[in-house]
Amino acid sequence: MTDDEPHEFSAGEGFEETDYDAFTLDPDMALDPDEVGLDSRVLTDILDQRQTPGENVDAEELLDVGLSYVGIQRFEEATETLERAARFAEDDLLAQEAWVNTGVAHAELEEYDEAIGAYREALRIDEDSEHAASAETNLAYALWEFGHTEEALEHAERAVELDPRFAQAWYNRGFFLAERGLYEEAVDALDNAVRLGMRSAEVHEERSRALDELGEREAAEEAQTRADELREERERSLVDEGGERDPPR
Image 1 (spheres, helix red, strand yellow):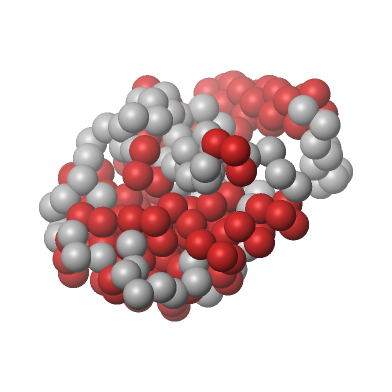
Image 2 (spheres, rainbow, N blue to C red):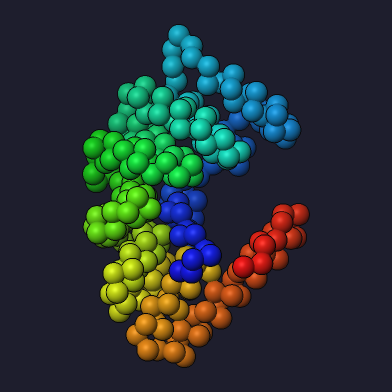
């Protein structure tokens, strides 16, 4: 990883949406069909109305609203709404999902201490559930950002133990191993991420860095070339979709 590129956030890549749909937004951002397509100001009003406390709090609906706030990058509102969902949820799995997403929103605000607390709350509910691997790998990322690098690796290891098919968890593990100078193990972990379908410039850049440290110059150059190709593809896609090209680095 270069200083210019942020560590890719641990939301996960390379899986069909059905594998990790708890941490993705529905196509209509959980709003009613006749409300979709409105401008962002109207969308914001709709979300604000839906999160207003009522006599009977629907934790599942609060979770949907919180995820929708994330979708329009209103992360402060997302943290408040998702935490309310977690506290009102009677179902443990729903509460755990809400706590994980609360942590995600805090991390987007670079509030890593709060993110760590939210992920720990999620794991306190159940350390072996279907959401536990996501909680562990996100916790690892937040701990690393907070300067607790050794503990970060421990949770990255736990994430791949819980779900060996979680590509993002393998990427995080490889990143942390490389940070500790364990380059051979890092390459193995990053190769697993690629085999499991992770397709990003960052994973190939990390492979290039680790391979270069091992003296495998040709393989390192190939990995960097692949990273550059993927970054160019991403920039072309943004331009085609009307987005802005990344500034020169």
